[in-house]
Length: 121
Image (cartoon, rainbow, N blue to C red; front, side):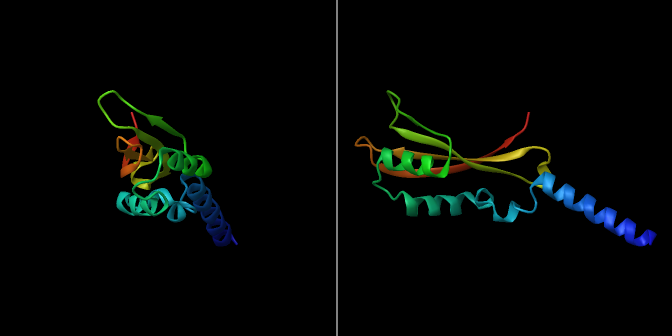
């Protein structure tokens, strides 16, 4: 009986540990894809030539915090936070996935950049 209790306790502790670090949903989190895979998927949804409004609509639909910027010496762009995930090797810090859509002078999508940063001090 003690062996069963020990195994049950270890199973519960392991399950709690997995839930706290996001492991059960981790493999299914789209933010865990490579930047290249995310970029390819976004190019299918917002192909070159898409408008700023179309990109902002996609971001709103997905619930991504997004903002449009336009500088004096740079073309218009839209920045969004695509998502985040935690990896055991970086615990307790999160990896943030960010996306930038760059537009030409006519406001048409030219390119998409995807990069990750570690949310750590």
